Image (cartoon, rainbow, N blue to C red; front, top):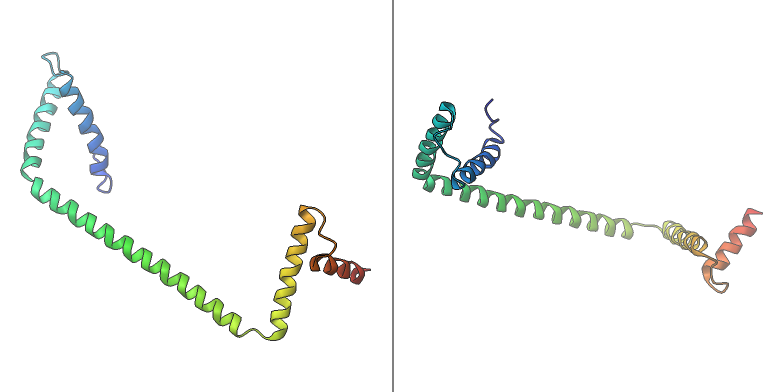
Length: 141
């Protein structure tokens, strides 16, 4: 079965390296089957043809590398743009908060601190968080 076009070179390169190692290890002999002999001859002919196309192959590899670098730059620029949009949106949100929303946000932050202190142990008795925790306890009762 032939290789799929999207993985042809990847799959074949491993097989070709295996053949190269077999040749280097002297695994070519008169005991090879006729099919193996024909396969070896085809590999030799293909390698010679590929060698003659080495300039075109190098050009294709360079175009791929250049395109890959451009794609990475564009991706980085897009991520930077998204981060900048998030930052600007947060700045705008902060600028448009009413006093009541700011107080709510600060209270929410204080409650989070209290919860963290309670989870990590007992809060300091002089801390604003401790006082707020006591106020919450009294409010609950």
